[in-house]
Image (cartoon, rainbow, N blue to C red):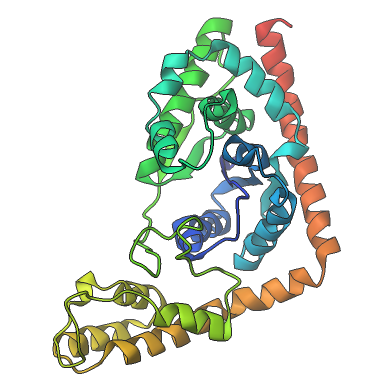
Length: 330
């Protein structure tokens, strides 16, 4: 029986952090290693232009860094197709066809569109590209006739819009050119930044996958804890402490239980708790850092992986576009 195909991607807008690792990449690796899926993972460099069109200087370097980090966390080019969106020009062609049939009202009701316009007030997002990025996203997904798209709950509207666009194409042009993709809901751990807000490059509160040694320890030392615990003598509330949340990810279960007990009875201070966490994160990231060192020292290997993956993706895309053109009769 053939494996079901899944697809996901990331925009190259900066360095990857622990939120990316635990919110998406670990799940990608698990899906890849399960053997149940044919996995396509891509760097969405055209999508980076939707909000960063005025400052494109670093997109290429961010793209290479992103793929190095993907390989370092365990994505395997022998098991997954790893590619760059702009290397497969058929994405742009399908985007054009889909843009002809997508009602503007569908795009204007997109909750992420409204949220990002409110959040990114330092940029002019009154562009067709930004309004229409869900159409490009739909083209990315249905190009590969993906069975499913791994997403968190907050991304469900994107997948639903893709489903509507695929249905509309099939209805207008007959047949079932594009299967209707499913949302593969993933459980995302709550990974906040060092200031207690969502971990984000724009908030400058992230622990990055490239952070090491003293830099990493300094960030952990500055993490917010229980706001009502003013001194070591005050009992803590670990359920409200971001440091304890990270212990749940990086520390052994027995240590987590001990820290919870000691925190509640003021048997351990925040300084010691953070010191232990920093050591655990360093240990947890060590295999990733070792693979980073390898790939950063062998960039020709990385470029070869990109070429091979993009070639594989393009072969699928060419076949899909032949069907789409035939359906539209152009």
